[in-house]
Image: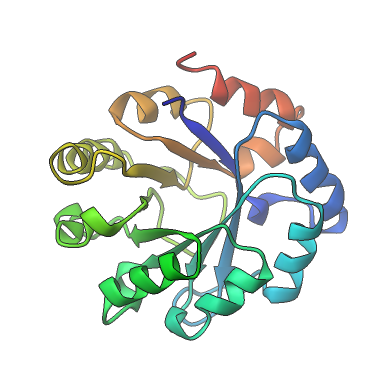
Length: 218
């Protein structure tokens, strides 16, 4: 499968958000990545339901919504109704992760689990057969524009071995510090979905940046 590119709207110019969404629509990107932060699980606050609904009204590609919030189970249906097509929750935030993942799927969305840089990917072994994707954080969650953590390459390879054993259809998504400088090695390591924020929206030519990340292995 060709790897996917998901521009992260957290790095978009919010004063020109519709223009930024239309740029992604025109581009070769595959998904919109939408980070939701509550100021509690992470020290930042971002998109709410009304903004997601407005993005969805003009987006022509699926919304990949990443919940960095403390009580995601309370809001799964609301995010589906706002427009999420993919929905991921952090391992630490779900006391009953299997139940959360099952509910996301029942609501008709692709279900993902997110794991932070300090957590061993083996923590997901028991739930891996039930997941559509794993989102590996390659920075500490909460803010865009951070430097990539190099240990991520090894974590992707570990997860890819688990995937081969337990769930060959699983997608591995990487988020944080991703750009043209490391995208090829991420894909080579086993990543299927590249989330890129600053590397796209702070580029002089965002569509060209997206194409560059798409063409790495084509």
